[in-house]
Length: 447
Image 1: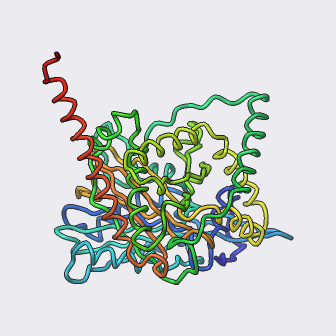
Image 2: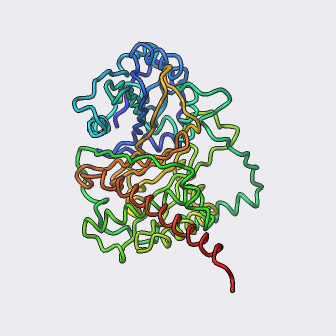
Image 3: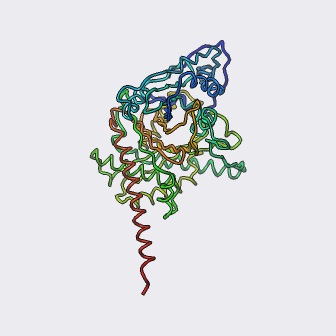
């Protein structure tokens, strides 16, 4: 991405990690997040514009563009835009007939395939009319502005919140590590990075290869969090474990449908881990590390996939890899983009997709006075190696899986989202069967 140059306006330093995310854009895979909120009734342009002006532009990052400055190595910086034209960032469109879910996905395909204007602040909003009985707001922003946790802070301003509720989960305070613990973390992180570097690359699959210019987007039917908890209760699996296991089952089915021998392959995902300290809970920017998760696509039995997912997720929670990757991105942000591209190729070759789970508003919220029925977002898969981004967002007691993929590699992401719902339904049936068996055993008289 080529940044604008207007040195006469005031500039502000960009953190090294945010700079790394700014530079991570590939030729066609940019680090742009696409979020969708569907409302129960129509939104008006006037009211939405007033909300954006009051509650989005109060954050500096949405009133600043990115410029490259410095010598001999130019680095990104935030530059104030004093004459910001809000209307240049806000588009008003009508969903074409038949105005259904497929038409909305096709529109999001088009938007997600279009780069943001580098001469302006790196965000854009589309108000989409005639989405069912209501409307949709599509917000696109570059990842250098903030991570998922940071954007929950933005959401807490942008959306109408029920009294006493919050969209951002509390961040427990993390004690400052002592010198010995810091040294241990550095050494452990270095060892973890080395372990990842010596791994073989993910083998060829529909998720790796030559990229095209377009994107394809799909989202699942929402699943109830209460049902997710019921599935995991028997083996102590968390909500995230169950949702990731269902995703792994859907990806396994998709690979098999594309002729991949899943019994003899690996499929690894780059997974973000929140590292934001409590004292910076309300700030924008990026405060997370990355870990590499081996998805259990070689496991034929659903229960084995769930157990393997829980075991591997538990191991990653105690791994120093996330912190080491955050430190690595801090280094990336201080070197020229060409060097960062090389490093991204090395690490990107070990994985095939990005996979993330974000906790959204726990209660139903409103937008410009209109209730929001659904929320979902597309996590980017930037760089030159990763062909797909898979994201899970929970909202008002339900979770939705969204897939964004290179259109050349994965022209049918809806096959994955439908597979997710099928896998989840199969999990529910198994739990129901186990519960029925347990009830029968209790009711049978003992000899």
